[in-house]
Length: 219
Ligand SMILES: Cc1cc2nc3c(=O)[nH]c(=O)nc-3n(C[C@H](O)[C@H](O)[C@H](O)COP(=O)(O)OP(=O)(O)OC[C@H]3O[C@@H](n4cnc5c(N)ncnc54)[C@H](O)[C@@H]3O)c2cc1C
Image (tube, rainbow, N blue to C red; front, side, top):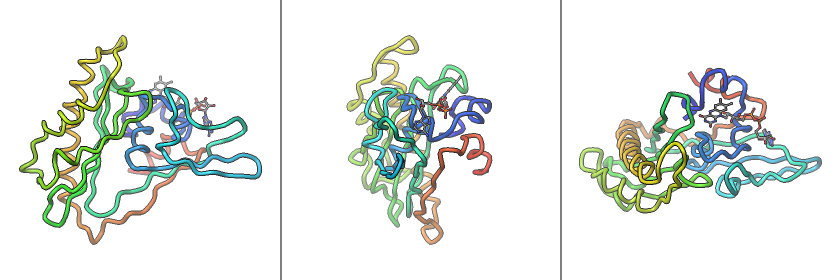
């Protein structure tokens, strides 16, 4: 998702934690944090608290940061086992805020059958929306899954708002298409994971890390 945040100039100046604190419903990293079940550390003089992603975003452009608090780090848990992810979005131009974006995580078992499928949405709801779409795909493989079933399950659960960029109907249609694509790619990736080398370690970024720096160091 990071490579889809605006352009390099913006990524080199903005910070990942600043992006989370900004709590833009169209922000990529907010959806990634929500999908992975991450958290943000908030510090004030003499105390620190850790807030789970589901509690951190309270409204459009509103995080639960109180007066006197500073977000000092964010944790993005790396999924363990045969779990893979994919991030995709649709924007009028590369680097624009997305009309809709989907971050997906799929877990498969030793027979490469889907046991969990989740997706987080941006530009769809006031705060990042995470949907469990397992019911539409459970027991299927990358070859047998009917991706449009998962797309239909997702579009039935979202209520996108219209704005100057897209109607609600168009946004819902894009959400369905992107859901199917993201889940398929994540499932195909999950099937390639060697569980002996997959580890569930935790990635973190401090408030002073720029998104540009993170991107470079990830290469
Ligand atoms: C032209 C342009 C295009 C962009 N496109 C995208 C895009 O496609 N996708 C996307 O996700 N974002 C996009 N952004 C937003 C950008 O990526 C940054 O997320 C955003 O500008 C915040 O940057 P910042 O870290 O400098 O935070 P600031 O702008 O400094 O702060 C943003 C808000 O968060 C608060 N804040 C910042 N850091 C902290 C902290 N540590 N603790 C507590 N509160 C804090 C500030 O008080 C402020 O209210 C775009 C920005 C621009 C200017």
